[in-house]
Length: 286
Image 1 (cartoon, rainbow, N blue to C red):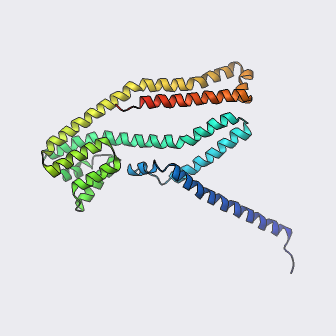
Image 2: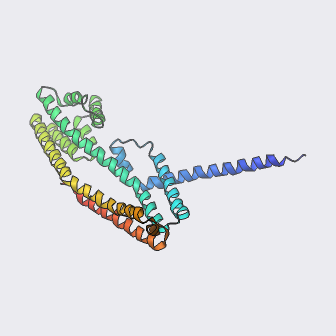
Image 3: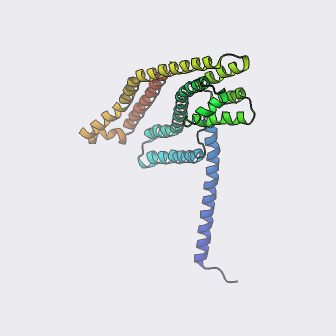
């Protein structure tokens, strides 16, 4: 039996190596999916409860994992800045949680603002003679997303025969939003124990409007504080850039010497934790 040419053996071995590498990368991606899902297990249910799209979340988490590896390799082996690499990798590591928490807070804030218009519109619809379910159905045509989906879900379940109070309470338990909780509890109490639903809706509208006014007032009063935090957080790096422009030879020692890198790492840590502390103080609920 004639032996195969050397070129064929090289091709077969190359294909075998490529297949093994591809299989290893696929298994590594699945392993990373499980690790990242466990790391974000406390935030993923909140995204789902608020009906935020999570279909691309595994893809983004893979990009995050790749960014961690690239950042570590870049700062350790290319720039040879091990102290700074620790800070850079940590910043990339905590970035997804900051982004997801921001998306959750933005969605909750949007739902809160939309609840004011819904409560006012429903009170007017009931005054006009519509029943409560029909009023919800009527105003849902004028409400934008994301509250539109929630109202449509409530009216859909009511049309299927489910009691309106149960549909409201189910959404309340899922959203865990103070404004919707007040709205759902007040309506449920009127439905189950009796009472003038119009007066209840008017009081709800007034309460939600007042809460929104106070929260926006608090945001306006803390806006200058947030700007100061951003400026003070950026100032050390602007200061370093100024020194780099005036004396690049000696300032470059911050990046090339071990002592300079340690000093830079300490500065980065102080700025990071100081900014987080200030943001936490400014985010205290009213």
